[in-house]
Length: 81
Ligand SMILES: [Zn+2]
Image (cartoon, rainbow, N blue to C red):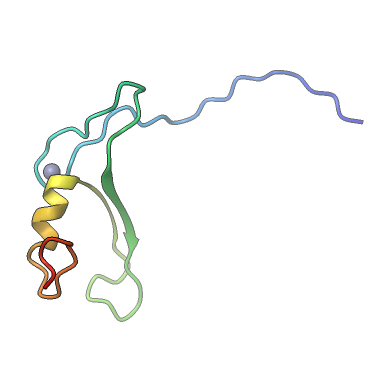
């Protein structure tokens, strides 16, 4: 048998996100959900020149498009042959 009681737990809530590249805030929809963006969390491992470093950043869709447009191998639908 389990007895249950209500408890309040403190938890982190993301209330603002900024694009690391342009510095603009990621907008929210009318329900308070963030619009699309890219979030990266990377811990570099052995044999990398960044071994042991941990990087975390967020990129808005506009800056994402700028970044990937510089790829030699294209990934955007409107850039593919
Ligand atoms: Zn941006």
